[in-house]
Length: 297
Ligand SMILES: NC(=O)c1ccc[n+]([C@@H]2O[C@H](COP(=O)([O-])OP(=O)(O)OC[C@H]3O[C@@H](n4cnc5c(N)ncnc54)[C@H](OP(=O)(O)O)[C@@H]3O)[C@@H](O)[C@H]2O)c1
Image (cartoon, rainbow, N blue to C red; front, side, top):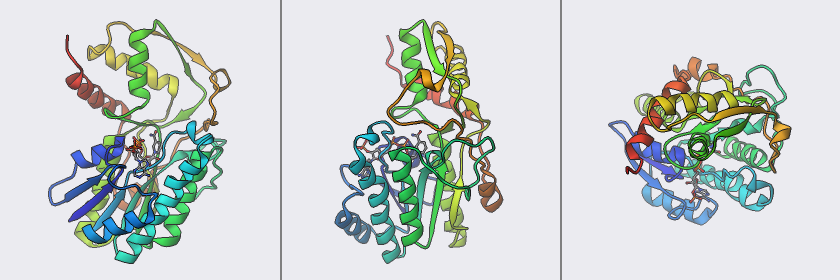
């Protein structure tokens, strides 16, 4: 089965390319080769390549910058997804797409179900929600997989930031009043490939909106604490920085972050038998990968 992956240089995109199971041929397009905000280019490439499945890992993900680059964020996250959805529908190609916990307000205290009311608080979340709506409107065979707190060996993420700061500083202040689910880019890629495999086997999927994240939920402070414990064990750090728990108000950012980002992933498990993975175990593998690729000397 021929699969086209957009956003192939991103955290999830790179894992998708590396983890394709046997039986799939994958063509990955980075933003330089396929700009999803260009409608004509999307249509031309999909019509020429004729993939049997499309996975969209492309997105504008700069949450804070989105507050001042509103048009760019919408150009990719809403319009880009609309272009993919329209072309995919016209050419009969199903589309697997990734979305975010930022579609929710973060005011809850129980895990968000896929059907819960959305109320994004910033431009990034609003543009991603608009993308979900475009996909639902224009492409009949789609899966939207909302995820959260993505980390991996490639690209910029919280794990790599903590490792860098942990080497440079003796003390670090980390937000301890936001709760969510760290999710490895690799486990998202595996989940998307598992869905693709079901589609390949059955010629269909239970299309629709699902949540997928790592387990269990924790705060950024807990996440940092675990990163430092494991980094010490794996020899990626020589000393442990002391961690200071702070509140969101003590760490102001241009875009508001949801205080509660916990996603309920049961719908995906019931429909497709795909369960959340332990993020601590995934973290071990990511750190090992970073250790193996770290410059020596
Ligand atoms: N990161 C998180 O914590 C997080 C949390 C929840 C959900 N998600 C969602 O998960 C998905 C994957 O995120 P990620 O962490 O892998 O993001 P990422 O590392 O930022 O990758 C996104 C990729 O999209 C590409 N891209 C940007 N604009 C594009 C365009 N117009 N056309 C084609 N490609 C374009 C980027 O390329 P350039 O770098 O060249 O611009 C980048 O390689 C996204 O849908 C994101 O919204 C992420």
